[in-house]
Image (cartoon, rainbow over all chains, first blue to last red; front, side, top):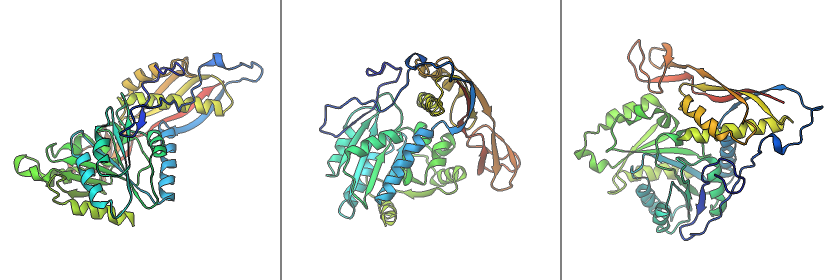
Length: 261
Length: 113
């Protein structure tokens, strides 16, 4: 339960840097608490029908649009990296940042339920990073990204990487305001993955097939995976690489470089 | 698990619309839940019952209208009902299907006072 206003909200998320072990518990929501907190005016009140016609994620979409406007205004290229846990997002990010950081300014928002582990890894690259811990939450949303952006020095003409919580289900629904959504799938996961998680594949722009160095040891068919993913989303682009050996990573770096211009 | 997030978003949206209209109580809310929206209506209902406590929605009636999914084959253009985001065309067995309906999740209208 929320300590500030006593409403039934789950644990609020935290935003901190890798050295920061003390954090403020903030409550950005303005919550109205039932009729007893309002003075009731019988003379003025009357029943009416409101024609709302709004997506339930209207507030998130608004926050995402604000983020998107901020990014576009400052020419910041924002990538939302999504995948199952363990697909190699952080390893790919480490390699990407080290390769590009002398060409372009880079900042990162890390998302996990708990711990600073991923933020600490990114910090080793010498670039700014913020860790968002969602607590019980299973995805990042636009509001969390907005809050994290307040703590992060993000330059104009730069790249912002957002590493989402490892989860192929929930993050699909939540627009963060990103320029591109990058779905990372590893060859150890099964080439039928796109058919099992169509909402996520539908929402992505680029699919990175990672851990190609393991292809000789698994029964994964690259052709079938691409075919399945393309059936769900014909506009999806593909890059095959190994974040550990570096094989194929240049194509991904060029993808980033082209978009930064 | 994201049904909780969605329930909270629904409560927030309903409250802000109510306040904007100058009203102070919600009598009922009509919600459109598409079969392909990625939401389980039962789970959403359950989470709503938790999330609406001590809010303007606490005593409101929340009506769900479930909308069936629709798809169109990208190869033979056959239109047919679908219940998954990865459907197969019943006419030509093609797996490249465009989802044309049933993925929405919205508050349609509310009765307030």
